[in-house]
Image 1 (cartoon, rainbow, N blue to C red):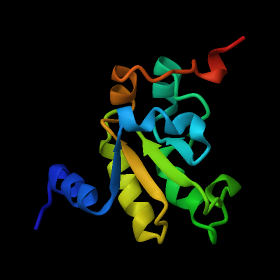
Image 2: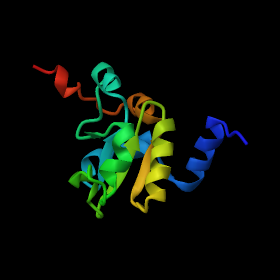
Image 3: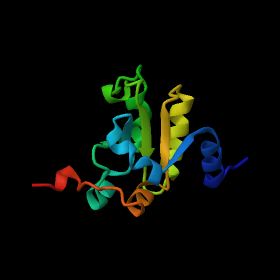
Image 4: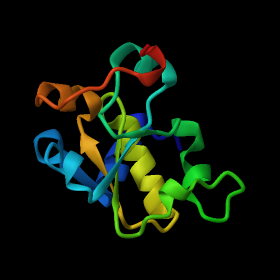
Length: 133
């Protein structure tokens, strides 16, 4: 049986926490959340990112997040923080958050509407550091 992407997104959204962009704005500086940008490097270069966010390519998320992976990154070993994932529109981040939940991470959520909603809410955007200078 085939499942469409919309069914995958709906299934993911049913088991994850979604934080709307307006509600995510004060979390950026609160120190309680790690913002994780899942977008492709070309999107970051073109559009920038949320200040203070870490960039984790979507294809590496599970490997960087899982403590037993040879690619594990220490930034994903902060149990006192909530990982707030985002992508362009909130589709990739919904799937990614659901995957991290499946891996046993309960401290994960995503920004509904993604980076586009963040910008529409007046959220600050930092130019991609690789373009600075």
